[in-house]
Length: 195
Length: 195
Image 1: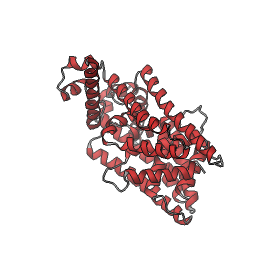
Image 2: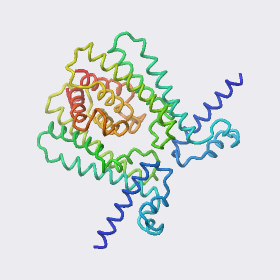
Image 3: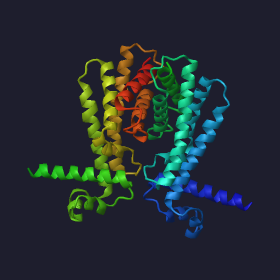
Image 4: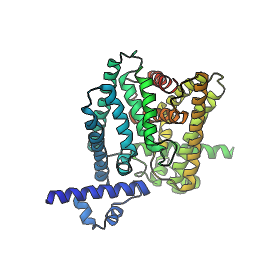
């Protein structure tokens, strides 16, 4: 019971911090701002997180957990590799565009340098995801007996670049909506990387 | 003569600031750090730039000028649209990977929110580049009488995402080198977006 409440508070703090970082920028937001937004005492906040770096690390880590759960775990069980890859593209775009997750996942693009030990942890989770995509691309290429002009690693980076870049230009009221975007990106990627 | 010296100092300040921002992060770098790195007095620095925001804006603006000169102006004169697009992909990857330009172009990805008037100027230059790529894609699709499954706008965003994301993972000593990367990305994009 106590543990549950603690977890809830941590989640609340992370969400509030993410919102502030989005609105006013990471560097312009102080620990005081975060505490004030939640009507927490400074001591209450420091009980959960020692520093802004620690909050940033936990946000990035949470973003990778979201990707793991909503994308990787959701597609793992799909037997057909092509279908698995199509679903991965759709779900990953969904995560990037999700109104609730976006505040958190966008923190993966924050350029603020983390202390080496924390950066290493995040990079290792990012690498796991890239390898998952790379292996899936290789599997689809095998099934399709593709010409092999495109290395799975280059293809994986291209795909993640296409998708992760979306936050830079996407407008919820724009011409390109989530469904349409997934369709077009799938078309581009399947036509180009898996021929 | 005086103007030339002034321009040189501004360029020097911008390069030094970009290097510091890369090394220690934008928010952890103060105007004092920038002045100290150049052995300038604080007054000498403020004579050129009033604030860190102004330096960041000028770095972003300079990054767009680099893109304009090294990519857009360099391909404009190529009569064949396919060749123009292939060259654009190669040159844009070259700019992203260039050791000298990288410190500056990477500032385009800094999430720090600029004052609205400055942000508007940068966004307008970014939009000009996106439209240039979008129109070129449309032209190549026409020439190739492509099936039209991919909207030029989605294709332009996909391509810029693929290329601009490179800075996130590229290692100068890695398996994927600039030439090979340009070849693979051209293959993916031509196969996928222009079918």
